[in-house]
Length: 213
Image (tube, rainbow, N blue to C red; front, top):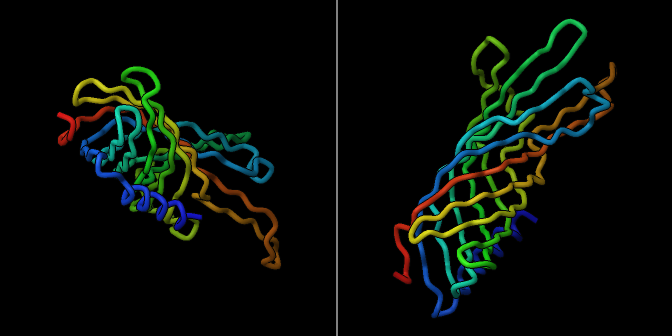
């Protein structure tokens, strides 16, 4: 599935007509991320909240007309979450930083004046990860519980103002980021839990190269 989606984006890029125009922009903004945690029966006291981060990168785009565009953002994205585990005696707090290098092909349609809606997917590589327990500072966690790759769907909106643009984008992760397994005394697996990325991007950009100028 991952290879099919990535190859499809390259075929779409290569299949542009002679009338299509290439644009190149830069973009940056804030990220508000969290993890969707599954298996509350296994960990019933865990509460996860959003954590602020940022993202920045370049935005190549192939524009077919005034309405349609295929963009191919490539970016660094800092994600993560804040987690609290509530017990009878204390509220244990931890934070996690997940640093991704991402590509995010999107098809956009200008449905109203300078406003467009987009849909697509993203694929990310987990370049670095850190976790901080309350009062202890950042540490490198065990890498065996992490998936090095992330894949998900995107939907968003963009507004255009000359060479400047602003955007809001939702990333809905489909790949298990963490995987936890509980074992019994004999070593047999009992229950499993996992989590998926959920990220909201808000930012702006500037076209360095725009063919229709």
